[in-house]
Length: 384
Image 1: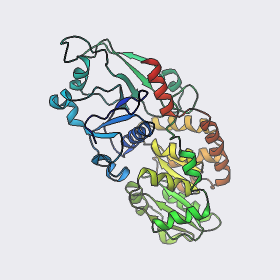
Image 2 (image 1 turned 120 degrees about the vertical axis):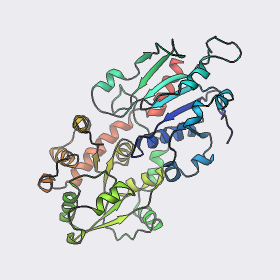
Image 3 (image 1 turned 135 degrees about the vertical axis):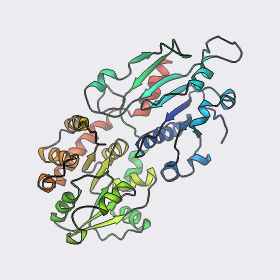
């Protein structure tokens, strides 16, 4: 891949997306989906990331230039004067979740080499892509400008761009071909073939995906699944979910109708497929929540726990958006609790049919909104 990717049409833009990986792959997961979606629409993207290791399984070939129009850039190079002197200026900067652009890169883009000391009129349009939340402040803060008052970018403006669940937010990531791809995997035969390709023997039992941190209510959830009519197979994702399942307090041997299958790390595309074929999806963080909504199946969301319980307010706001029933609220509160006392008693009877209707209703409403990339591109073009 070329060191400086070039937009493929006059309407295309060159985007610099900045990502610092905190933990749990959520930051890089969202940023990579953004990059891939932009590239699929004819834009060119440089992804500046401090830890690209997760891309090895999330998007194989990404760091080797195998994805057209996307170049993965090592974070230290954004501080390297030699690299920056040969860098084609981007049209747009996107700071993922408030990570800060290197001052050396800002300085390199602020002043043109041909007119020392003069502001470059091609300074990138600057966007801070914020975390997803259903809380009321999102509508108030979405698209607000933030003047830069100090440093080499003084006089420029950064804009906040908030993903969200309402018309007055930036929407959710959703590729233009998502529904068509999902429909192709909607039949029982397609479901069976996908499972077979991944070495999973399926006899028609209920399927549950498990992508979580370490929920104290995991044992209780497995017990509730065991009470449902018919067998259940839990497909456990690699990493923390596998460790949590293996340490679950309820001995697996006491479960009569629930079996656990441990999966290897899945690409983002294959993870989507997993969500589409399952009857209940346990997800965590931001990226997988959005993908579970598009899957349209009953879901159980675990937010990254915060010591001051601030995550509960965020959870309540999301459940309000879903217009969640009492049982769906109860299981979410139990699933997100960090109190290990009486967890079994707090898990309600699983009402998958009711939860399915709730998610399907929310999904249909969200599909009426423009997706995040469509809104972001329109926003940039209007403001530039």
